[in-house]
Length: 530
Ligand code: ADP
Ligand code: MG
Image (cartoon, rainbow, N blue to C red; front, side, top):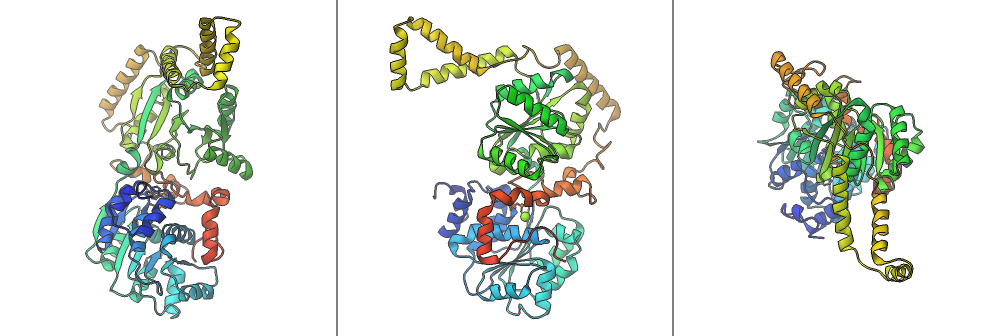
């Protein structure tokens, strides 16, 4: 076990906590974890800022759990804005702390408070609560003895959005000043800073920027092609890249159906995923993809929202997405949990402007490459074939077959026939050259340079709000804007896709459902505290 969680050992956690880490499958600490945990272990108050899905729960959860000393009282209080988040955090802390015998109770509105208080009094070390219910219990004196040594305010900016700031201030009046306080948030608007000044003591600030979390592990490339070449290009790139598991993003459900049918006809194991599918077949498709039965998912943006599959090696953009935020969201399906990923985008001359806009807003490098020719692909495939033949093990059946064949034809004939069979199976196909001719490409690049020169600012701000926001893609909007959506499921460490998670969860998270049921009672979904 110690080998697996080597990178977590340096924090100095107890063995039982490391076991929880290993069982959770974490191997490498996320950036926010690397930076925040040592300070928390050292006893400092802390403000942690990182996007959703970057592992903030374990960033505060692991050191907090590690610090539990007494088992007969509440030592850790986590305050989260919604009951769904409370449940998620509680599940995660239960998972990480189970070998240390940690018991967690979730406290939120809409459920019997007597039961919650009763569970706490029967001995829980961790309480995860939403502000409204917690304040009710404190005001009515039913949580008289609550004196946690560590208090965590999770998703503080969301608390602000939901109007909980006054409640939070009230809550802290009940808490002992002898405490370590941690505050986590994706963004840090002024009221949150003010709040931090009130409730934290000489805090360390730890901030992990979007670049560090999303781009480092995702290699981003684009290919300029003609409109009519899309299918050939996507096939060629799939063949050349050999993704273990990939998502091809398309713009419409019709396209998802057409492209998946085309891929299946060519022998790939693919399926479409779009919003018009029944929940059941959607779940089955996702399950097939997660289990490795399906190699390629052809998905629309909406359908893939919140999708958290660990080993997606490639994201293909069959069309360039409509806006930078979709782009970031799409490519965030790969390179998850510290793994490497590749994002491959097809771009036509007409879409070239869109690409510049995305490049500008994303901030990361998106490299231009050329689609491998049929000849290149065949060469690469031959090299691999030769390699695998050289390294193949000879088995008894082969011996018997060869003896049989040699009675009929000579060895050279046999070899040639076998190789032909193998080559055919590799199935390189399509036209030799795919992509813009050198001439057209040069003109396109020159036009773009000129255009940029005359416009100064480029394309950046036309449709995408203010310029100069390095994290603009994660801005918060109104109820229906992208800001809202991207809050729900921005990329990173297996984000939880708050909005449609209930659907995804059904079949796959039974363990934590069960775990939770053991102690916390029935798990409600969604909704806010009051
Ligand atoms: P945040 O609070 O920043 O939105 P979470 O704490 O909910 O993110 O973590 C998102 C997901 O990433 C969870 O499923 C969590 O179990 C997983 N995770 C957290 N840390 C790691 C890690 N070091 N390695 C792999 N997965 C991790
Ligand atoms: Mg969180």
